[in-house]
Each structure stands twice: as structure tokens, then as C-alpha cells.
Image 1 (cartoon, rainbow, N blue to C red):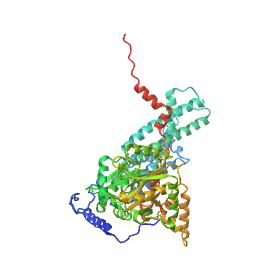
Image 2: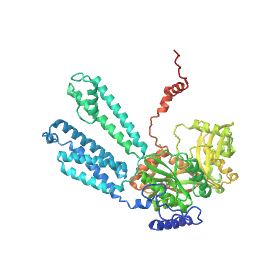
Image 3: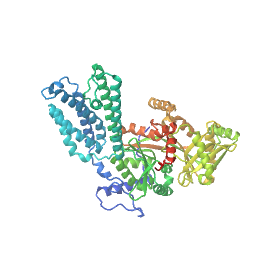
Image 4: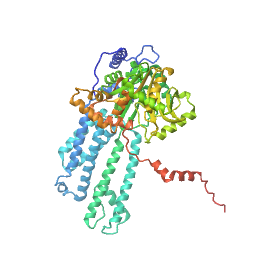
Length: 638
């Protein structure tokens, strides 16, 4: 794993560099509008309003103070910790004895201290990410907190909270990140549901415990359960008192759980449902027709679960998906490299507007250089892409003996390969192939994001190449490759029947390379090998202890992820290795972005409660359909 090193710029890089210098001059004070797409030599530039972003533009965002959200988050967390720690002081209740109702006031203020402290701790992280919604909540909580501290005579904490409140008002423009309206309503619905569930649990405990002093009314029991959520005693008396203490602990725990879940749903990053519209897909295809030969990952931008950001003139675009608060793109921007800065600016603006962490998986060296220059990002070498030059490939020689033996063994067992464009395959046969691949896939979740299209035989994919291996007329393995410019293919799907002959994947790739000339294909991109350089160099003689240790870690991780196996599989075909890079804001964001990347590639799948699937198993869906079909009863006439 290495950081991106600066090198001499080639022709394409120089073009992007020239575009960047012109764009910098435009941002620094030139008022002329960005040249339109029809201008013969016009370089695409980010619009001053940030493209799709409706808030501060890319240039304005650079002038924001980095220390403001960090300092505000730290002070907010400290105030919250101070409020929680205050209840541990033994003289708290003694301070309020001179008031009219000391017991009630003491309980209320202690509860308010804990609730405000916990909320401030929860909001501190969102405040650090410049969330506008968190800023509003912190302002309200600090106002209440200051009043409580003045009431209780805690002047130092009140002064700190007051200074923080004034500072947040002064730097209010620093907190601009928007939330998702859907999360706000979802949080309210969940809050209401949890409160009802808490009350039901509290009332059930009162019925089962049977430790009440008297037969309290239903309203008094509801009041006791509701007060218990806030840590305050209600009108119900318990015998023995231990049962009352247990009820207080239970109710306070339920209230704390409700508070944390509601705050999380209210503040979590927005994750819009990604969907590439037909109009955007057509525009992306037009760019791929002109510039698709630059990046083998370009066609995967047409996945259905991606959204798109366009440059002001439409010469470039970036397709992305939001995963766990990370705005994740893959490959290079689509379009002319001179127009890439015009798409990167709106992309970063959109990420800042929603407090998403921008990241790019698997971009080329040129793409990494432009991303780092435009967005002040960091790049790490993630691995290498295996590219086979069709003219140089041969099964002869000792190095190809393993592949040659595999191919011959599969052919002797009667397997036959068909290499065809998707547009040349009848629809009925395509449907049969899709059904076969679905039956072979063991998990319901299909892996892949950066180098996977996620579909077979869809409209518009007629230029994809589908390779099938048949035994006695039955499909036993499938290979799909997507277009890479006019003369290239990029491997997308590789599935086979587990009961089929071993070596079918080697057989299909070899047959594809043999048929490539007839398809007008000169180069084929195979799988992406993560950390290939470390695996290769770590096994060489003279490798240092750090490199050997890193290789050992990768081999250990290969038990769960296809790291070593993909590298060895690709290496069998003697490919040319092209480095791919991982671009992200800073090292502190790397773990979070890495988890999001694993989730996008479906290597990390969080458990979810599928209510519709449960309803189908219980037969509720069938009952609902029957009730809908049942005609309404007509009352007999008198």
C-alpha cells in the first residue's frame, strides 16, 4: 500500500492540468460564465453556485474554518459530561432544601441534567460534521442548560455554556449541512412508537409485580410509567421498596433507549434512494461512446443503484451511491478529462451539503491526481487491475501450463462455449440464463459495486458479451463482460454451477480471448486484485519484515475476502497490471469509508428485519389479497 507519488504528466494529464489552471483563474475573480458544451475549446468549469448544490460553492467551502466545528463539538461534549457528572456529587439534594418542594425540584433538575448532558454528547459528533439540525438542537439545549445552572448556582458551567451559545450564534454559517426530511418524520414516528411500547412495558410490570400499596387507577399508573421514563417518581407507592427501585431502573433504561434511538434517527446522514433515470443513463451512454475507452470501469456507472452529478456543461459526470453517510464513487469521472474538474466541484459540494464523506474507489492514476488536486483529498494505492492484451495471449509455454491443462480437461468432458453479444441472444434464452444464475447464487445479496453491473440482458446492454458453457445443452457456467470503449471488454459477472467441472472459469476466459478478434476486441480487463503489489513483493526473497507481516495479514484476511485467490487467478493469464487508487478526505475518515466500501460491495451486510418476507411466510399477504378480492356484502333491503 503506497501513497500516490507525483510523476511527469502525460498528454491527458497536461490537458487536465491546463483546464485546472484556467478554472482556478475563473474562480479567483473572473466573472465570465462557464463556456457551454458547444464551444470547441471550452474547458468545463464548476459553476459559481456549485452545480447542483444550493448552498456555499466549492470555493466558498474552502474558506470555512476547520477549527470551528471541531472546537464546538469538543466544548459541547465537555458541557454534556459536566452535566452528567454533576449528579454524582453528594451535596446536590442539600442545595435545594430551602425551596418549597425540595424533593420534586431535586428530581426534576437532576433528570434535566442527565437528559441534556446525554443529548449534548449525542449531538457533539453531528455538530463536528457541520449539521444544521444539530446546531439548532444544541442552541436550544444550551439555553435550557444555562437556566438550570443559574438556578442551581453553578456559575462556572453556566458561563462556559453561555460563551459556547454566543459563539455558535456568531459562527452559525459554519453549520450548513442539510438533513433528510424523511429521517425527521421517521424519527418522530419511531419516538411515538417507542413511548407507547415503554408505557405498555411499565404497565405490564405493575400488573405482574403486585407490589403496589393500593389499587391505583389506570391514569395514575400511566402517570407513574411516564414519569419513570424521565427518572422522576410518580404517585405510585411500592411495597417492598426494592420493587419500586427495580421499576425505576427499568423505566429509566427504557427512556434512555428511546432517547438514543430517536436522536440517532434524527441526526443520521441522509441516504437518498439511488436511481439512475433513463434520461441520465442515455446521457452517460453518449459520454461513454466518446470517452469510454479511457476507463475500463466506465460502463459500471450505468448501475441502477447509482445517482449522478453533472458538470455545468454536461461534458463530464460522476455516478455515485450514498452508503452509511459516505458519498461513494467508483472509477474515473465519465467524460473528457478537461471537464473532470467541473464535475468534481459539484460532487464535493453535494457531499458537503449533506455532511457526507466523499470517497472514490478504484480510480486511475490520472483520476487520483485530479481528485487530489481539486478536492484536497488523499490517495492510496488500493491494488491493481489485470488487463490481458488479446494479441499477446497464448496458451503455449511453461507459465501457462496450469491454464492449458484446465482448459483441455474441461473440453474433454464435453463442455462447449458460446461467445455472443447480448443483442444476438433470443429473449427466451436470456431469461433461462438469468434463472440459472439466480439458482447458482447461494446468498440473496449479490456482491459487487465498483466492477459489477448487477443485471443481465437489460435494455440498452446489447453490446455486452455473454459467454456460456454448456454440457449436453444445459448451461453450467456464465461469464458477462461489459464494453470498454470500442475495442475492449471488462469482466462483470463470473458464475457457475457448483456441481459443474472445476476450471470452467479458466475455460470461459480462454474461449473469450480466442473469440475476441471476431468481436473486434483487443483488450480485456479481468478482476481487480486488492493489494496485489504487497502479495507479490512480500513473497520475494529479501522482502523486509514489515512487508512480510503485511502480506501475512492479507493472507489471513483472505479466509473471509477474496484477496489472495483473486490475485492468483488473475496472474495465471499473464496480464498487464494497472494500478488503481482509493481517494478519501483524510486518515481519520479511512475506517468509516472502508466500512462503507465493504457494505457497498456486499462483503459487509447488516442484518435487517424484512417485514414483508415475514408477512409472506405467515400467509398475511395472501389473506390481504383475498380480502381485497372479496366483494362487499350488501345489506338486505327491509
